[in-house]
Length: 322
Image (tube, rainbow, N blue to C red; front, side):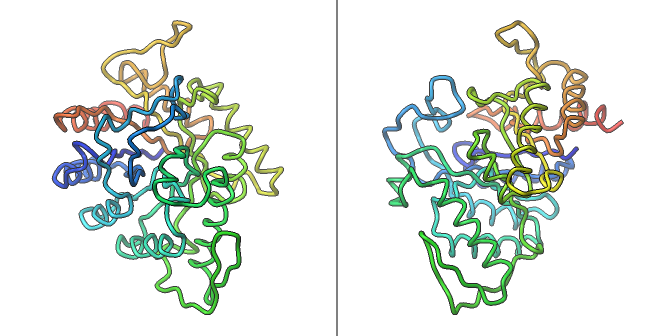
């Protein structure tokens, strides 16, 4: 099992000294991947359409919306780390013009000596699409797929050319190519049927999140069913399902107390170290290859996050690695 940690690049972890502390701590503790999320500009009025809460309310950024730009943060992290992989989790692919984005990702991959992972999503916030003057929100799925095909074309072809609905080019040189060959791994987020089809067509790894109310994966059985469903869709899309890895994002992690589901059962990844280690082992047996852990954040101090990372490395992980 590999382990990932990360940051909302805003608020406390929007400050360079705290991002550096987080990144260096994770690398020193032997975490494999560091993720950074993606928002560019925050509309002041957002309709309740967030897919990961029951109400649709989005309260991730409080009332500030002070996000650092994702690829800029990855460049910063590439310069202050040496081994940890750098994951966009997720990049909202339609937010950025594709050729410049492909160039930025390739550049960071070169500068980090081949450590970039491109975690992708189609996006959910219509207001941010409109604020960025991007192509129509209702076409975000097809935009995402076309842009990913452009990335692959630019990264792998010696004389790239492309003619699509949203972008076209020919007679260009795209260099340098990414350090990783044929290209940085592409991870596709999302739990919906369209997201699963995109993962089946284009991704190296599917990485769902645990608590989508419409498609929850918050029990081992639900997770197993989700992986099985993804593999069936991959077969229908003409892919070998064994070629698609599985990572799993948990933002319900709590090693200070147990949480209970509506049925009164303990919520996975909460409770004592041995309980969490047992959960990890069970999910690993069901196909999870990388666990993306949402460590606690105190808006006023880094101590809560850093201390929890240490406890995971010292108390939980050794029981899984036995």
